Image (cartoon, rainbow, N blue to C red):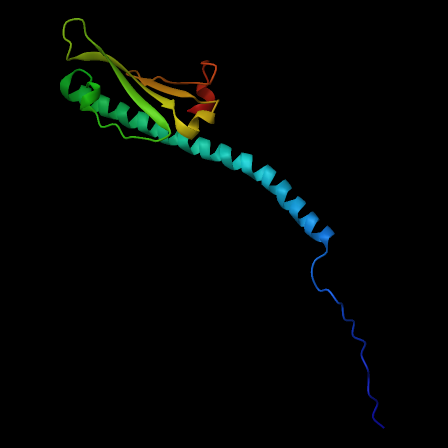
Length: 148
């Protein structure tokens, strides 16, 4: 004798997600985004700082090389300054008292522009002929240990 086994099947009229499940998943995504987004924004600001300090060091090395050949520092128009959309780079060369075309001191400054202005910790970077690197925050107080 052969027995037939009947299985019970449950059919639901609606196989989708409930409103509570959707609200919970949206809340979890919102919490994760609120944690991740500020961290990402800080990471982007720090990466632009690296670009600025690299540009300053590049110009500093150009000045040192020029000084070794000519016994004075180059004027700003004789340097290759790479443009950066997040920082404005300026070179100030101090001429000697006897000759306007030669100089014994310089200072290179990178100041925040565009979206980088929200970086309140490191608003301005400077480097001089003695390779003294400084940075300033939005209150114009030194923040060198945090930025370089």
